[in-house]
Image 1: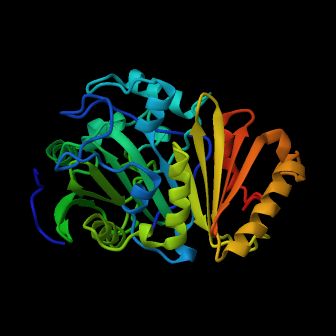
Image 2 (image 1 turned 135 degrees about the vertical axis):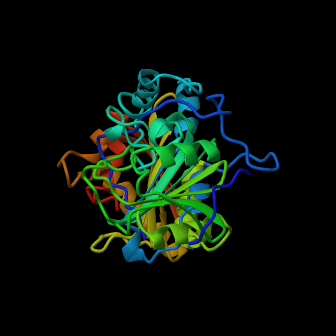
Length: 362
């Protein structure tokens, strides 16, 4: 693997809601389609569970909402071509908009792919990787300690060259963190509004890690990138959280294209340990919810509460009956895990607002 020059040398939230994805053009060697192949020929894991494994462990009060977007999986599901390497910005924006608005429904997951900067900045030009090269991205944590990661097809040399000559060139240094080459600029959480970038509309400090050609890591402080590097090298990760892992597995079993996961929010009326919501597609949008509980009896009680809510309860945010928003409920119990699959009425992107608004489903 090409490596950056050496010297040596928590945690992200997701914000979410209506804006989306980023900029740019193409990366060398990216034919614009499919999941990247990891060393040894195995496909890099862009599942929800696989993306959890890229993030470091966190305490429940640090996690916020874990957000995952699986761009290439969504493109395949919707029949939207992934632009080839070298595609112009309009083609890339058309691709991102098709996946995120209208019938798309994907929500922004990390600063590595953010439509808010797409009109004015290009990750291809400034940091050497194209947005369409990102197969999936994930973030978690609470500002300012945000950590993010992406799976895709990345040219390490091109990323180093672009970053050294781009808007952070005056501050960037090449270091190594836990065996991972890292491009580092500015001190922890520092901002410079005169040097906004495609990764930060406020010119934040950055730590861009490149453990291999299928993975990008991103944080705004040294502790964050150190924790990401450790997870990327096989250390402990969020995937080792049994409840989050159980929820991720349930979402993956329904082939969700995007997901949000979190420990039980304080003040919830429901009894469980972790919850997740995801968007799936089988010709129409489906919402998948999964809760991990402490016991089979808790799961049975929760399933009854959920079924009653979605059939006769109301949304806290809108006051509308859940039956007007979510249809055909299929609520299942498997040991201590509860899963609900429902059709989604209206715009597919609505799914991403439910957890953020702390609806009574959570």
